[in-house]
Image (cartoon, rainbow, N blue to C red; front, side, top):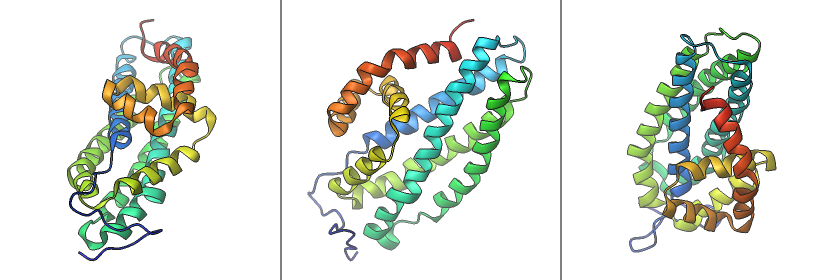
Length: 226
């Protein structure tokens, strides 16, 4: 394969360090975990009606979760995929995943509207659109990790992925960072968490300390007993 430079970058050469894809894989794990438990909570509510406090917490948590999913898809389309395409060229076919993103965006919109309506309509049929979103993203993430992640490890220089990661973080609002930091920390293994914090630097350490309690309170309100 001929090298395809982008901002001075070329394809990873044998012996060069692989990109650290911890942030991508932990984000996938957090998305799948939360969509599964959100689906279960909403399905359970058909037998046991949700309290008004639980509905409020679910709406807030759902809005933050759907925001993270939207951001993740946008970052792939706008930041990561163009870099992979430029560096790997015809060795990677991103078209199916890009098409998936368009279909998922419509499903995401339906799920977000259904969860947002929980505070106004306790019996709103929110479980079905959230389950549809869960199923779509489960398959999409499985395909991405089976097909694209190995290609990223083969072709993407470590510095190229770090640059994409940092660009995504810079574009994230402070409010979103306050959710994202503890959200990812909760599903990360200790070594993964250390890698995430080291990559983001001292601001991430401060966010974990400052926002962990608020995230835990919101999570208990959405998914805890009551």
